[in-house]
Amino acid sequence: MMNKPNNLPRILNTNPELHELLINVFNDQDAAERWLLRNRKQLCGLRPIDLVDSKPELVISLLTRILKWSSKIGHSFRV
Image 1 (cartoon, rainbow, N blue to C red):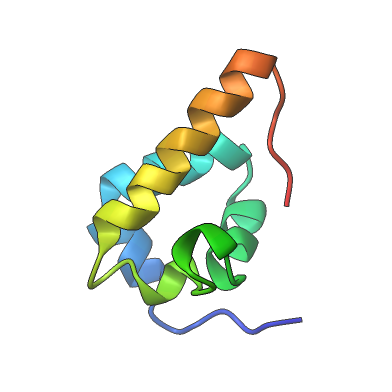
Image 2 (image 1 turned 90 degrees about the vertical axis):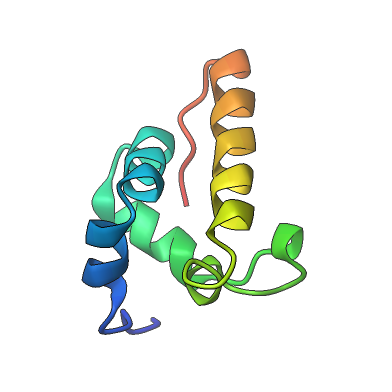
C-alpha cells in the first residue's frame, strides 16, 4: 500500500473546495486519500496528489465530473 505524503493534510486544509468535493464524491476520508494517491488515466496517468498544487483545476474538474455522473445514476463512488 502507498504511504500518504506528508503534505496531504496541508493540501486538504488549504484547498477547501477540493476537500469538500473529495468528501462529497467518496463519503469517506480514507477513500478520498486513496483516490488522490493512485494514477488516473483521466489525468494522463498522473496521481491527483501530484497536481493539486500546480493544476488544482484539473483535479477539481475530474472530481466534479465524477460527482455529476454518480448522482445521475444514484451510485456512491468507491475506490
